[in-house]
Length: 454
Image 1 (tube, rainbow, N blue to C red):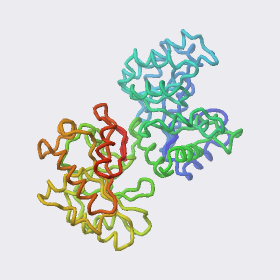
Image 2 (image 1 turned 180 degrees about the horizontal axis):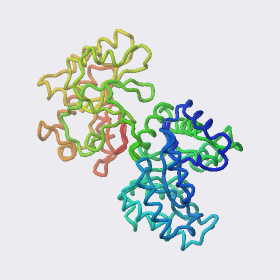
Image 3 (image 1 turned 135 degrees about the horizontal axis):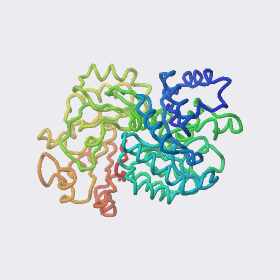
Image 4 (image 1 turned 30 degrees about the vertical axis):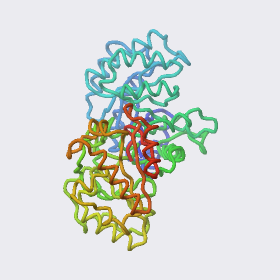
């Protein structure tokens, strides 16, 4: 995992800083971002980043120290920010709880440091306490969206979270999430995981069961475990992978995940057979990312049978094998059938996720060929009418494909053990009408959320 917010330069670590860093490494913490709070702390953060390969730094003035920010110190921050391992400006913001600096001074320091971030094109790490509305307003008015960043230790409302997400900011959570009466647990479950980050804010805010002790980067795993509970049936490994990718995207932490043919989400094994698709859906993940739930699915070539088998290893240890990936799996029908036969021989359940255009692709009814090979099929109908399908899904087969997909659903319902239809909660989609379509077809319906993939 990655601890996106630590203060290892603080005096609480003076006696055992090396041991704390090594412990984090042993616990699988692959990167730590050490956060500056004033000029002295920013320099120390850069020194730590210089000394340790796994540590990166940000530089900035905390709102508590806003009254110490002046033209000279701002100039020094800019110089420090040129260091190749300085990945952001922070922590900056507003703290109207303690008011250790005058509010007007906090506001000016916040704006000045956002301006610096815009000049050097690096994200910001934002501290807001008891000032969410004003803080978000400043982020909007200063065009902070251009560099983005983190709303660190997020404690605002769901509406404020949505405002932050609309500005392109990530929301970060720490040990407070594990507290018995945490107000954040219900909020977090409503958020898109692709914009959630993990942190410790060590030496403070130690997670349960170590509450009352000094916090340290190794404990970020406890935050990940809590997120896994909240996002169940996603696993800790899913949370670990997703939040790591999120931090990489924001900070550019020199991590290069390899593309995957086989990948795990929850307890299911997915097989990525192709990046090609017959649709150009306006909402498709392929047009804005190569990643699904933290997995890089951008294949550099179309895998053959032996490559897929080698990528999987032991099929028997999986609950279910799903033919999915970035593209449309029925484009590689022969490989799909050969693999499904192999999987079924191992006694493992199979599922096909498809856009339902397989019959158009192969110019024949392919559903009988899937009998005995596919246990469950999930078909992306997405919308409730042919006109909307043509507009949003943009099939290479032209107009009216919606009705061909309906025919494919009927054949699957007739011949296969389980058929599920999925639709998307786009503003254009009439979900009530989708329910009626599924009822008429006598199939199960699952509603998917826009930009929530996997």
